[in-house]
Figure 1 (cartoon, rainbow, N blue to C red):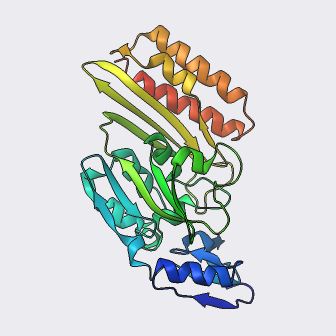
Figure 2 (cartoon, helix red, strand yellow):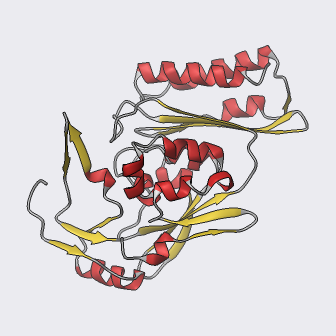
Length: 280
């Protein structure tokens, strides 16, 4: 464990958390703490902030509820607990969570911690953006809901206001007939040149009614123009439409700075393979 640490606060409810946070504004909220783990060679070390606001005692952040339209989970729900919910969770989201380290770490890591990494957009981000998830952000006086896409921002820092906490994640329970997830780096924490890509499609009466392709790594990447080319097309897709879609994606990737050229090439191959499945 590196450095000297001053205090660890253990609030038992949200009100107590914000009272403490107001007194110690530089304290950092900590969920499972998995994002502070650093692996070097065969050793794992922890680099922790000086003052910690532990969220572990906040029972209201560990609840899971379901309605006909969405499933809602607190930010402190462990990743394996989400996976164990089974078929009620959109498959692409489950795929993404299963690719996070091993079961031991997933028993510790929380969904809020994965979403709120200060530098990288980790595995949960891409599927949550694609699925139109929404996040509740709270301060001592306010609460607001924000889309996953806006929160993660397509470039720049996360959309937190000062002393604002992610408390709930709400995922629409819509039917996606075709979904794929691909991780381009398997280390933890994820390498800066890696990332994750999701491809989801909704098919109704042999028509591709909706298509979404989202990448998350150093930033979030999505090209709605290319998605619109195929939306509304009959299946199987025409090869000319597929070629147009791929060329739009190729041009889109060539016009952005990140990720690396190698990852861009692998993304393009993955997207091409995914969409070709809809032509057969």
